[in-house]
Length: 132
Image (cartoon, rainbow, N blue to C red; front, side, top):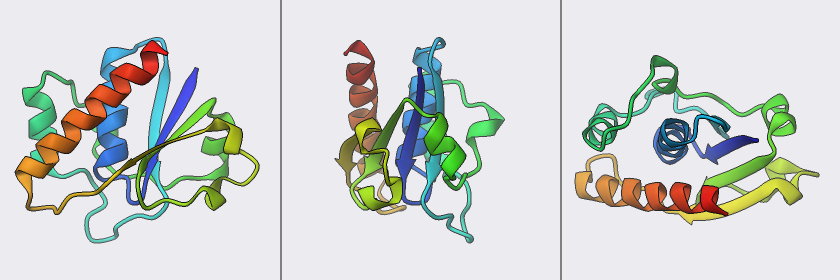
C-alpha cells in the first residue's frame, strides 16, 4: 500500500504523519507533500524534529525538506490523507475515492504546547488508520 499525506506547506502536519507512519509501518510506502511550498521556510521546524526524536522516532534526512505535490504522487497513491483543515478536495480531481480527511488545524510556529498536542493527535490517527 502507498499512502500520501498532504497539508498546505508540507512543513508540519503531513511531515509528522509521514515520519510517524514510516517509523511504525515498514511494509507501507509513505510520502508527504504540500499544495504549496513556503519559500521562506521550506523545511520542517527544528523544534518539531526534537519533539519527534524525544518520542523515539528516527528522522531521516529525506524528511527534512518540504515537497510540493504533483500528479504522479497522486496517481501512485492508494490512499491520500489530507491532514490539514485548509486543503480543498478540488485539487485531487477524479481521485476522491482515495481521499481521507483528518481536518487537523495548524498551530502557530511559536506554540510549542500546541505542536506537542497536534503531534499526539496525528500519532493517534496514524496508529488508528493502520489498524483498519
